[in-house]
Amino acid sequence: MAEDDEQVENESGESARSKLKSMVMIAGGGILIASLSIGGTLFFLSRGDDSMAGDEEMSEESAEEAPQGPAMYLAMQPAFIVNYTVGARTRFLQLELSLMTRDGAAIDAANAHMPLIRDRLLEVLAQQDYQSLQTAEGKEQLVGELTQAVQTIMQDKIGRPGIETVLFRSFVMQ
Image (cartoon, rainbow, N blue to C red):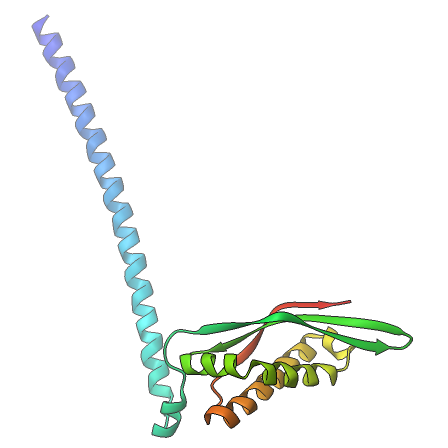
């Protein structure tokens, strides 16, 4: 009887050890896979940065003009509303815009000259063709024209474009 109890204890001890061993191997495998994944990602990301740095040759002047730091956004409130006459019907465009920059001084300057910027943007919006704004190309062209208008004002006021791009936060045509 004592032998049977001892044999049962050995079997249950061996069973517990094998389960523990399995769990440790599974956990170790999971950690290994996660480590390889992170290492591979870092490897490929660092390779991409090196190859891009080697391909780009920037002069000192263009390096100074390149945006530095995190992106900052200035929401232009209230929304822009422009009406268009298409045939015999009146159509409306409602836009909510934000300005993107990496220069805090440009945000301050844009706030200071916001009435002038809004006026110029309304002029650009009023000159648009309603039909072309319904296409992706028309919207891309509009972004370019709005960005150029803001950059022209910023160039006059602070001596540099300051604003990288104009972003649509809302674009509703009716």
